[in-house]
Length: 357
Ligand SMILES: NC(=O)C1=CN([C@@H]2O[C@H](COP(=O)(O)OP(=O)(O)OC[C@H]3O[C@@H](n4cnc5c(N)ncnc54)[C@H](OP(=O)(O)O)[C@@H]3O)[C@@H](O)[C@H]2O)C=CC1
Ligand SMILES: CC(=O)N[C@@H](CCC(=O)OP(=O)(O)O)C(=O)O
Image 1 (tube, rainbow, N blue to C red):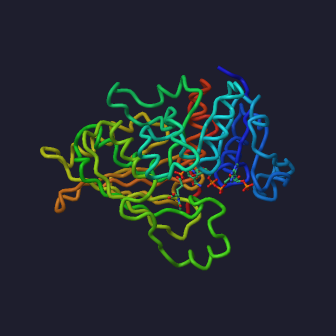
Image 2 (tube, rainbow, N blue to C red):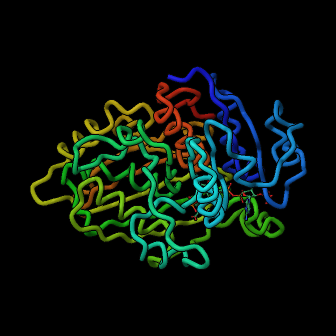
Image 3 (cartoon, rainbow, N blue to C red):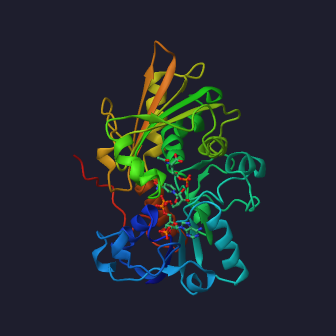
């Protein structure tokens, strides 16, 4: 077990990078090293994240393998494409750092899904890394993904919407009490999920007081990643209808996921499946019956709050998950996975305590 380690954060001026730093400031073993950005290089971190008071005077450097190498851990919080490029440069430089990619570049097994949903462009499919969702059941081996992460040196942090949908439904898929060939997921999602550059001049005028769907009709980039996870958790056939809706909140995702109750399954069996699946998980918590998750409950925490019920009239299981897109949806998942890979207690520096109301 390491006593202390250095962490470089690339994309430190962005939302995800800022949240990684907020968590690392509360991590007893982490020493914060280089902080990098792109157009903001040369500026003080405090110009972007004044809430990170102890780091306000740190100067952002340009993102390069030279600057990032030499740390024990490198967290990439960059737009997709950029992280694939820089991680390849780190490999070429022979870096033995633990690298966590918060972007999408190393999540998908399928090159054709990558081409279809991320456009390929100048960067081909960079290949999948061990997936940073410790709670994911691996049906093939019967254990959870955390066992893979203990020996990982490269980790692909999941997409935030993906985490919410996967954590909501996986107990049903893993136990066969839901039919994964007809999954419908509708999500309310906060604006920080889109990153800080999302049309800031129009944002307030368009966001406040409005709900806005996007990525509808099977076009959202998270569709293949969710399908991949549900297959890993044991689904034979997955068909997913996925609709995210921007909601006028800063942080938070509330996923409502429904699927047919499998033949022979009962409401009691459904509840038991969810209870057993998450009984030993430190961050995924099944709420008491009748309590529904809200985004306020998880703001600033690494918790994913889950609830499940059976709609007998519709014959469907209804599973909900609330998480903070910047917490368990990105930065928290990165720190949780980092802890596992470094041999630390999984929950070090992380909390299940939200700031509601
Ligand atoms: N926000 C969220 O809730 C989640 C985000 N993610 C993923 O995390 C990553 C970061 O997202 P987020 O923080 O929201 O995005 P932001 O737009 O807020 O931040 C992007 C960061 O990357 C830097 N950057 C931009 N272009 C380049 C480039 N070409 N090369 C190097 N650095 C660059 C920016 O620097 P500068 O300030 O100089 O422009 C900034 O530091 C993305 O891949 C995103 O998909 C994953 C799950 C959830
Ligand atoms: C509001 C909003 O736009 N949210 C983003 C989620 C961000 C995320 O999970 O990022 P990755 O691109 O790394 O998967 C979206 O739905 O695409």
